[in-house]
Image (cartoon, rainbow, N blue to C red; front, side, top):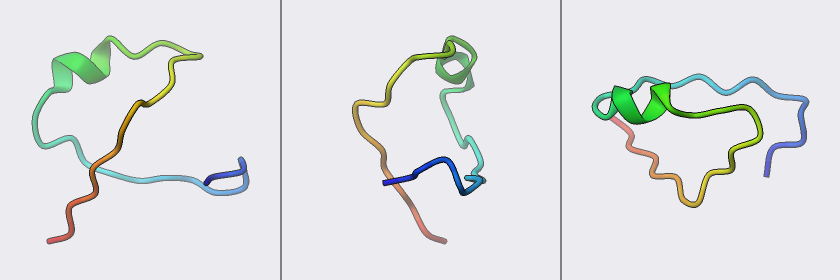
Length: 36
């Protein structure tokens, strides 16, 4: 649970068209974290 004190870094590996449609105020329904 992020409380606004941390910055999140990541890489989009596929689905950049979906990322481009994200607007301020949108909420994530799920997150999948993959470690390499």
